[in-house]
Length: 177
Image 1 (spheres, helix red, strand yellow):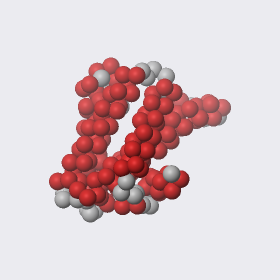
Image 2: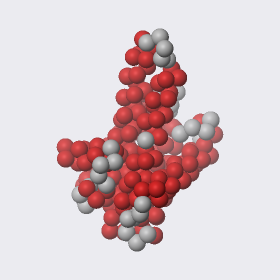
Image 3: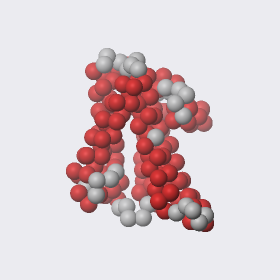
Image 4: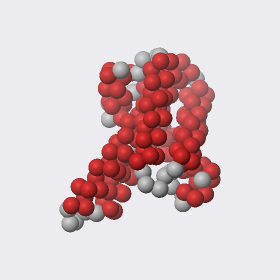
C-alpha cells in the first residue's frame, strides 16, 4: 500500500507514468475507495457544499474518467486501461487531499499576515486544482504513447467538458466545479 501511494505521489509530481502502477484490480479498488473518500472529505469540510455537490462531482469525475478510457481504447492501448484508470483516480485523490489541506490550513496562516488574505488562499487552492490538468495530461500522454502536449490538450478538453457538465447538472453552482 505504501509503495502504491509513493508511486501515485511520483505520478502527481510528473516523475512516473501509469506504467508504474501495478496491473491489479485490487489496487484499482483501493484507489477508487481513496478517491471517493477524498471527495467526501472535501465536501464535508468545505462550507456551503452538500451531499448533492458530492454526487455531482462524482458524476462529472466518472464522466471524465469514461472520456479518458474511451481515448485509451480508441488509440489501441486497451491493455493499459486499468493502470491508466488507477493512475487518474489515485492522482485525483491526492490532489483532492492537497486541496483539502490548502483550503483548511492556509486561511488561518494567511489571515495572520497583513499582506495576504482570502484572495491569496483562493489563488493557491485554484492552482492546486488546476494541477490536475498537467497530471492527467501526463498520464494520458504516457498511456497512449503520444507527446506530452497532446495529453495536455486532451486533459484541458476533458476539464472544460467536466466544468460545463457540472454547471449543467447543478445550476446553483455558478459555473464552478
